[in-house]
Image (cartoon, rainbow, N blue to C red):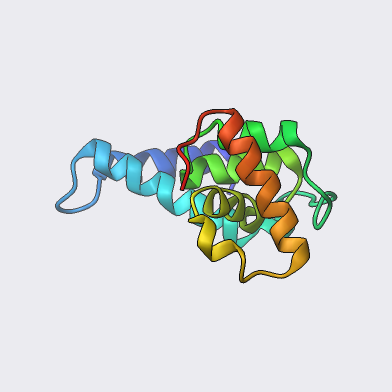
Length: 127
């Protein structure tokens, strides 16, 4: 199938919609499917040359300055050449209560402290 045929098929699917969903809900659902597909195929779709590398404060500021949506997580993972799990982890640690952190290993605790510090600097509410 060439691009033109593919576009026509996709447009027809969107025009016909999904039973019980409005046009806008159909588009939203299609976007969700695409995001899940990209996350599932991440190893094939973009390089992760920064996998397991340290994060800079500036990188954390960029991540924490966006809403923790699936779409933003995917965008950040591609942009920073990392896995989606690492982006999700940043959001998770930024919003985790302090008492939970002390039960982690030393490397985790240092990274979490960095995340918490950056989150505080940009105005995240303390937990």
